[in-house]
Length: 120
Image (cartoon, rainbow, N blue to C red; front, side, top):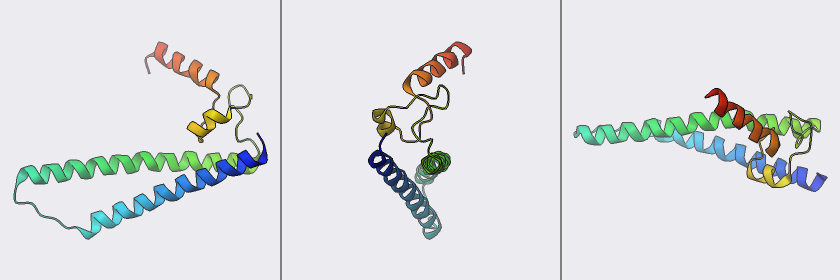
């Protein structure tokens, strides 16, 4: 992978990180700025369901932040794009689809097959 690709991934990962952090801040503002009270229990249930869904999304994004930070660290130490399992280069197309990935497509496929066999 050439330096141009590396810088493109660094920019993309930083943008992903900024977007997640911005959404998190917006969620906090929305939840603290709107002390809503609902007369109708159905409206309250809908609002609570929406809030719960939003919090689950933010929790998933929190986990993604760690993966993004790890990918940026791999860029810094020169191991970005190397499969952690076999050491081969991860294809640029795969990295474009999932820039936080640590496994090449072959190792990921093997991992998923093993998980199916174990029932994970």
